[in-house]
Length: 207
Image 1: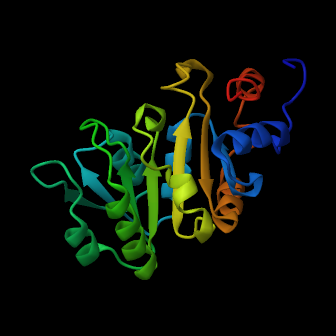
Image 2 (image 1 turned 120 degrees about the horizontal axis):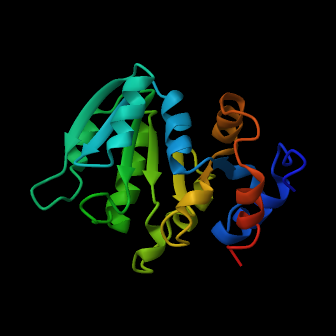
């Protein structure tokens, strides 16, 4: 496999990811780690809203792409400030939330997540969930299953092989989003962004 280019469309890998995430292959985008996916999603935004404190790369990638950044602090108990989000988000804005968040480790409740997505969608914004630590969470809800009926409109959910699978070195991230956004991401990302070793690993670890 190292002697030839990987499949540029990563069909076998997407099929494996789709089975694991329980979503359609047309909704999957792949990245050289979750950070590349964060970068690609943010590239499509008009303005970026970040709940703080959070993973530094959200703001770093936004600033590198010359996006205006608005910080929305968590409440004193580190829960999400839905009212502040509703008063701030505008059309074309992207709200980035760690779920569970890094460094607080707190996960949004199912009810708060649905309400937040409703607000974002109503204001014609976009909700990007970084769920790199998803597999360590209680099995109370799965956001991919939760929003399946919406076809992931105005929503991107990022996960990765880094944490739970303990494979940070292969740099494999994957996300579930609407088919329309998946096509936009694939137009802006670099070709062959997943190397042959990561591609092979990704076809096996999910089973």
